[in-house]
Amino acid sequence: MSTSRNYTAHPSAIIDDGAQIGDGCRIWHFVHVCGDAQLGRNISLGQNVFVGNKVVIGDNCKIQNNVSVYDNVILEEGVFCGPSMVFTNVYNPRALVNRKNEYRNTLVKRGATLGANSTIVCGVTVGEFAFIAAGAVITKNVPAYALMAGVPARQIGWMSEYGERIPLPVNGQGNFTCPHTGDHYSLSDSQLTKADK
Image (cartoon, rainbow, N blue to C red; front, top):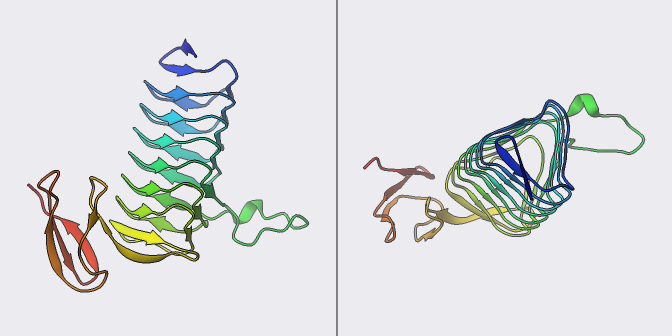
């Protein structure tokens, strides 16, 4: 690794002219960042990551090896992308049909985790601190704090901001205090919210 300006990049990385890269980013082997990409601060891009032109990545995101972040994907602060997880940007691709004008926006909100080998089909929003299990395929919007698993994915529970499963029903009502942080969560009308301290 060598330091260049305000971030660190391996000599094998390709960073196109014009790319905006924030302070403290770490860019590893064989990464390609396109020229119109916008990267915040303290982001880690693992080996063989691709970042497209129309991509915005927030502060403190961690993108593990072999992930391609395609055009029209926005990752808010603190998103974790596990190894070899997949984003799409066209809903119904065909090699013989040009659909570059049909890209759908994908938004992953603050603190969400996208597990290894999971797939996020374009056009969805993944809520804050949601947790997508390894190998899950997300085809519709995901509520905040939801724990999703399966193909296609379905909600099987709730997760705290700390990353612990919350013992509450998927549907219904209840309260929970995280034993690690003391944070209080409340479930009402199938929506989990965190109480302000």
